Amino acid sequence: MPSFRFLHAADLHLDSPLRGLDADATAPARRIRQASRDALDRLVGLALAEQVDFVVVAGDLYDGDWQDFRTGQALVAAFARLTRAGIRIVAIRGNHDADSVLTRNLRLPEGATLLSHRKAETLRFEDLGVAFHGQSFAQRAVVENIARDYPAPLPGLFNIGLLHTAAAGHAAHETYAPCSVEQLAGHGYDYWALGHVHERAVLHREPWIVFPGNLQGRHINEPGAKGASLVTVRGGRVADVAHQPLDAVRWARLTVDCSGAADLPAVLDRARDAMGAALDAADGRLLVLRVVLEGACPAHAELSRDRAATRENIRATGLELTEDDLWIEAVRIDTRPALAPEALRSRADAVGKLVGAIEALAAQPDAPLSAAIRDYATEMLNRAPRDALPADHHATLAAGGAIPPELLERARALLLARLAEG
Image (cartoon, rainbow, N blue to C red; front, side, top):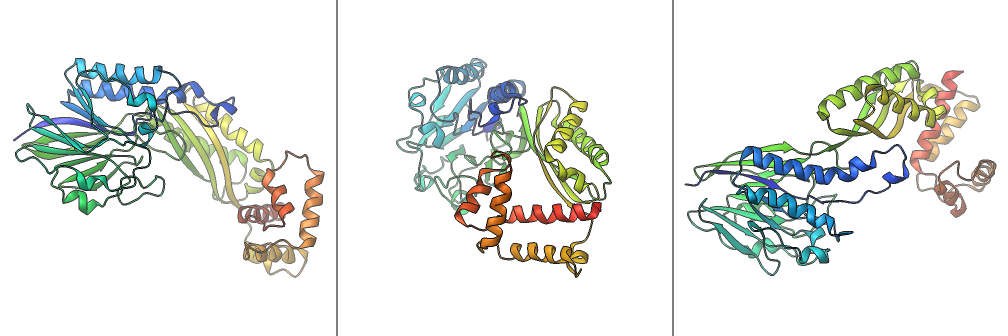
């Protein structure tokens, strides 16, 4: 029975474009732009170091049509490093690859095979006792269950299915090539190499059905370690499936518990400790953080009074740790005043009435603004510089719409904080 090792990767999204980072002068845009290529280089380096027998890539090699041929040339060069070392590659196109006219005409190096988009096909590696079954996307939106038409497993061989799919569905991804775990498990293959979902997930064992996640996180909504799966097969059975982090840039949301913090310096001390631990966990990668300050604390008023100053203080604290390997993408201030709202609501004076009015508005999120509130708010907005507040504040008032719940919560918290100061 066959024994071998291979790497299962997916969703390389080579040269995935930056979105909005160029607008921030502090962003390390060059390193983030280069990250997908650096992660691909790490994949190649791992395959060579581990001397794997082959690499499978389950779709989305690219991120759509290239801006120029350098993107395709980078992939060909990376694959050629593997094939020259005797490591073969089997891949399929995903929905992003199907968008690319240039991808369809790309010639891969000898030893790298891109399975057909016309129908599911089988490729054999007789020397290893392996059969690959898969089908590329012919167009972006493949809404039918193409796995039903995959060939039957070949007896005496280790059968691997390559499929770009959302499986039973995923909130963050289009439901392409839908199928169930039960269907795949019952098809008779030994390993399903899936792609499309950017989070690593093992959907089933024996047979193994695996999403390795994407090779490199592309934005803050793709946090955590990204990479590929190193699969060991002994005697025709999967012995181990190990996640291998390969990302060059690590995205993360970092929650800093500010509960009880007396002032801004106390919050900054906690933020420094939390960021230091996150840097250690990133293991030398560029770490991109969205810092979220949470908890009920006396410092809330100081943090909320000048949110821009708080953000810059957090960023300056990050620079104390490192100038090169940390970028704070955003800072969210979700702290709350330490003063209990129940005590204020029960007061008979204007403070109690104001707290009660805000909470009544929050309890009816879809209720339109009264004319008096709208006129007063419009007057206040007109006194402020036009760009001092988001445009949707003005649009909401102009349309007579409801106050957004998050704005009401900020108003309530700010009120409580100011009262706590006094």
